[in-house]
Length: 397
Image (cartoon, rainbow, N blue to C red; front, side, top):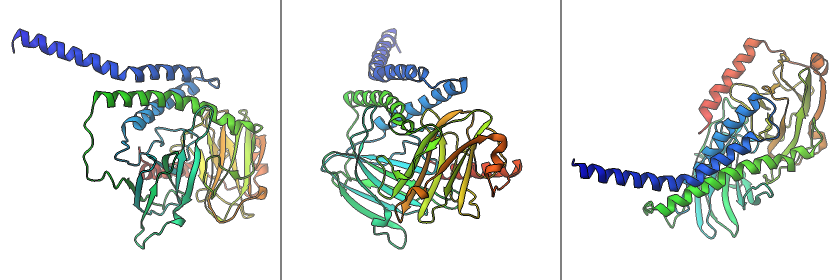
């Protein structure tokens, strides 16, 4: 190659680098702004809090890129935006989440094969969650309203009504050890069989801009969201079962937040519900996300928990190990969110179905557990190993 050709190639490379920089600049700026939001979070008290914030930021960046680049309104598909590496909105450790973006007036066909999970639900949302408003639930149903063949396959058609923006699917597992995922996909009949449009600089620029907006807005949204709900409640309390904001008709939840000293524990007592396929409790961090549910026991379903002879499930929320099966680990968090969920209900719930909460000295925990089930460290390690295997088998990322 001649010196002139070398120089020409250098010019092309420099021009290309400059154009790429121009395309990604909005996202670069948004990442810098997001980092400032994370570092300035008012609830950061410890080095662990800050490090978890930066880990949370990585998940937000990942979600923003997926939101912008992994979908095409002409060729819809379900993406998995929330998982153990991308947590948001006090995500449910027992759920797989799938989102597909919709265009108003377009017909969609959803096909799949039902797995053996406790619940499979569908919800159409209008608008979006923001720091000042919530998305609107326009349609919500579970698979009991579908015609499911003997081999588990199903199909339904939906034409996106005015205002419809997103189809959300939740596959929820009560027994992590035995329940299996299903199969699911979505199609636009009018665009099937046609090739995707070629990339253009304008398209890529728009995608990077979408990712930038999504990144900062999602952080601001989830900073604000718990103050609309969890933090409206007095600390160390849980609400009676109520309709979940933006949730399904057959779902109820109890929400709250905790603050415990090192020598304190919280005892949550709730009846086991036999009139629903799924019931669970979880605690989360001040980042309003699930805490490590893979290598720590920070959530329990009714299938994982021990129910006492009187029909009650008693959970202990604490930093120190009380030596029982129903321990919910705070993993170094003195404060955080709490949530109980009931799904696929066959009847409505009243206050008597809900939880009671008592904060007690840690050393007195056993006095508040009339039927406690002792667990040795070796038995507890086996429980954690089972969680790790189940998450590895079930989760997507």
